Length: 519
Ligand code: UN1
Image (tube, rainbow, N blue to C red):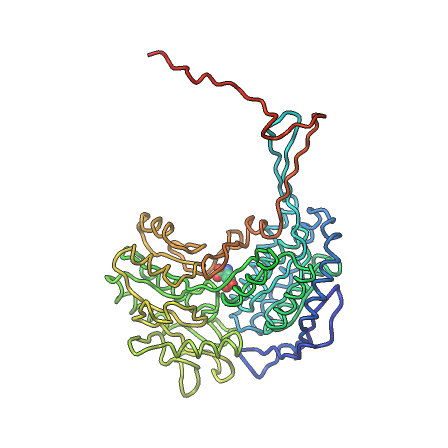
């Protein structure tokens, strides 16, 4: 049974569908429609931005500790609805249920972190260079935030933006991925009801990418957006960065990755293999933190390759409601794109990890497949040995169940290879040598570094974000995201009753520079 999903602006559902109607389909059983979605257009986005602008001053007037209480209530409501929300995520994007529950947990973690921030949002008291004068700093909300998110983490990653943005006194237009509209609408309802948010504080716009871009362009021109948060591809991130730059804004961009894992000769090989399996193939390789290329020392390359091949061959793939390593691709669009990445395979590559490549079917079977492969968008996992530095497979993100393998001789070479694709989100090294770990940390361009842990699985209270093609250096999560959703304001207060001029009317002490201790 599918439901009808609409955008919500200023607390009112928008039943019209100027952007057309979309069926959100279960990728594990494509015959099953999860929701009928009424899509908005550029005008819908601009209207939502106006509603957010109108609601912002009074939301900023709600004391921060009270906004913090709203976040506390949201966290509780999400927890009380965890299984339902996780089931919906599994049905809509095919993420295995255990992972979907983990994703919901990440929202609760985010609420747990920020509920207390309502009673902090600290500014500073700072000494002045003059008497009878005091300096202060305050965090002010930025204003209206436009948050545009991907569908691979349809509820957790949005919460990284929405929760701190609201806590800091901003109002929001949230535009989730259209193919994950039902999960988004469920989170939206939990946020607005759980938080008791006044109408217009959080607005939901369901629309496709082009209409969203046009709507964002219009809303910026009208002065109704002050901050953009975007999670998605590097190409779209660059367009958004360009657009924001024209309005002198710096967006918060969380983009793609080609996340490397270096396996050194001292590594615990079994541990590294299990991490490569999880981060390469969990979520069908569709995390921005998914493993891209394993860079393994040539002395242990044969052993590592054989063990990874075996682990991937034995991994259960299939129905995401069962206990599987991964289920289907998120949506037909992602399946089509993955087919394209598979055309990059060349004759010098050795394909491991499964009985075939491409779509799993009765004619192209995968041993141990759980369920009926014909029902959904299921793909063979593939480990590609012999990847070379100039291969597209090495330099570009391949969002799907594909991991490249290459070798190195010394750590400097491993670091150079790890940085070569020019992304910089997550990275990992397996080693028992502390010097290797710290040399890698220093040399790697990534915003996140794991030691003896996989490239995936960042915790919700550390800075999350990347450099290079992975982002513009902005960070989400923890205290660091506060700098995205607030602006520092400084205040100085002179109570001397005179005009004391900074840098001019200051008291000088006179040092005795000729003084020496006795010989
Ligand atoms: C993403 O894919 O956009 O670190 C986020 C991880 C998850 C978040 C991934 N906690 O893999």
